[in-house]
Image 1: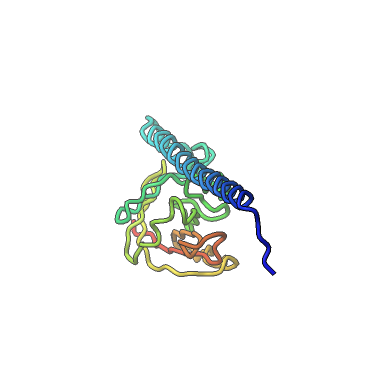
Image 2: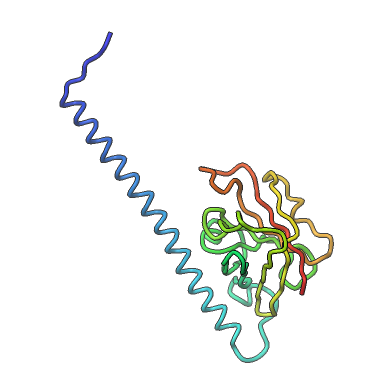
Length: 197
């Protein structure tokens, strides 16, 4: 048995659905625009502040990130055209705006494994094209540290061994994988680099 809906009801339903979908699409685009703008503003302001501190006369503040207002430094991957400020922590607000230094891991210039996390759909998106031997530079107020990529791999989120340390100066970048997955991604993409200078 077919139920016939009056033409006016169908027309009203189509108009309402169209309006609801348009509103949802506009809201999603607005949110994406806000996230990108917020990231750009933070990166610009933090970069200027980092440059100002780096050029200040006198000895740099101590190695603690508290002395730098929560900024760890600037990370550059020249071949990929990546340049971003790295801030302390991996909270949602931090990762939306910057690379986040994973608490409990080493700081640049210290023996150990430096862990830096980032979102795959913002600042860490270019990592999908990273290759072995790519150069990564991490600049802090104490100096510039260079790392060469030695490996990439995909692990489960519970595999925290990628952040363990063997005493060498290692840099580990962590982001979600797959890069084009819709929703919470099931895996983690790991870039491991070893200090060269």
